[in-house]
Length: 181
Image (tube, rainbow, N blue to C red; front, side):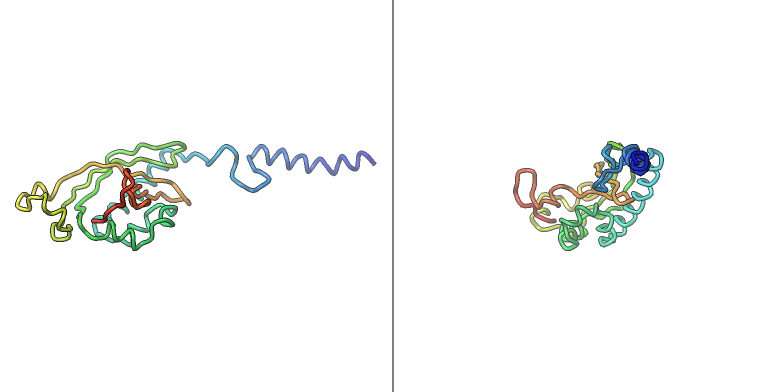
């Protein structure tokens, strides 16, 4: 009788060991060790492809498509109208955006992407309070190449770029409300 009970428990013990080996928890969450690390070469190739899409929609000023490339977690906080209010006014025309360097974070699931943007201020779309400090007769003040860094995150099987924190919170680092351009 005791042996029959032991035989019943052997498969259950085997399943428990398998669950522990593969990191499955009783609650059905991800393994305790965290998300699986992405292969560095594949992560870079995927990010470069996604960045090319980003650069294309940025240069064509397709703001709806730009918004779709924003981190879904941030899209929950910043609706399309707010995004368009800040970015979609066409104040800065990006003639080209080139990827300069990628620095991957932990597990290759996040990255800081250094870019060089050949951009031009579109003076007629710039609010008057910003125009007063510019010499519109000096093209060098209106167009130039600027380097900056854009954070990206791997989420839901895709790369997404992250917005400036001021856009997500609506406040600058000092706590003042952010003015859109």
